[in-house]
Image (tube, rainbow, N blue to C red; front, side, top):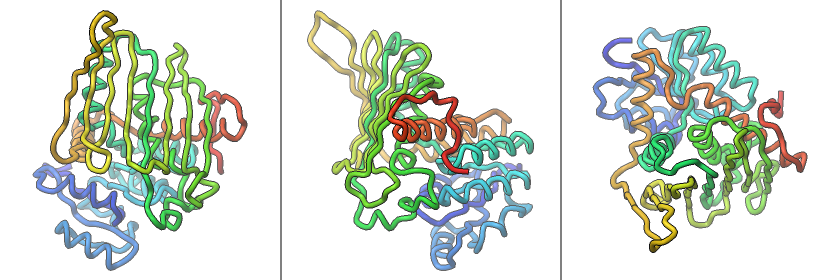
Length: 345
């Protein structure tokens, strides 16, 4: 690559706008073009960010002036776009979930390895300041031996959600657990490594999106009996993000993600039996910088040849965890995660 990473953004929705916003003002990045299916939104987004509009992703993949592709399209398109781009020697940052089947996701990882390019899955929650601080508490031993993680992540949806592409089972790999909960499952693995077994439950309670779920609950367990619980909900009528790690020395938690989820706070509650309960709170001000920090990690991985945080393998394993929950809910019994394959061919 040149001194600037020359990027093509594929997609014109909200995620594309978020990704593009993280690139504004950077001297090490140039958005060469923005590709979309429809002329009007593609031109509008390109004009907003001062880039070239292109109709159809196929036209940008083999361009000599593109080093990397950022994929912000529905999941059923990810494999074709990513594989074609990587085979053309382009690095790829692909929104989660990495693909709609494990077979597709594994193929993406295989192509990246064969072509010696960077494949990164879009897990921006890894870069939130509260999560970064919580990770440090875990790694430095502030919390002591970790017993369990407990998380609730939900939002209230919006009128007409059932008509959104996210509610079309032909385009997506799952419902709310796949859409938002997968971020939490990725954080579980980031902090505690791979899990062995899961017991899961899913339901479609309010939104008419069956067979996709609007609520999912699951408990994961690893080989040293650490547990991780998630409730991922589309019927959380007040948006919520809560992530707690309990250890022998205390509890570290992150509450809020900014915006409609409330001020992001990292909280440490020490274990002190003989003293009044107390907590140490750090509140994070300002705009959400997780998208920009994720982009920085992607760029650094390309420059140094190292794997980024939230790499292709992380994308595969988070996808496997979601499918394991679905399989457990279907069987009404625990499931060994590593045995789970894609639920569709």
